[in-house]
Image (cartoon, rainbow, N blue to C red):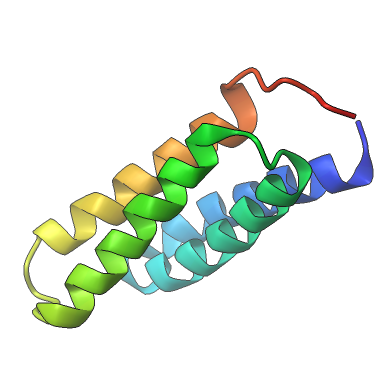
Length: 99
């Protein structure tokens, strides 16, 4: 496995450990997962699952910017969904290796 492939998996595992921090760990988890997703996108630019991740993430950030009420529990459901979705894409989904 090449170094670039290991880097996004390691970043994702670190992001999952940040979840142990509860609500305080979510921003770090999101940041690390976006960086891991960018590395994955660079490695596999034709993968449609990663584009769906960026679309959902961008939509979430736009909605949270418009409707700022951080005490609403709906804002914690979407990031948790995104964490598991990206973990599935990075670790378990078969990707056509173009290397």
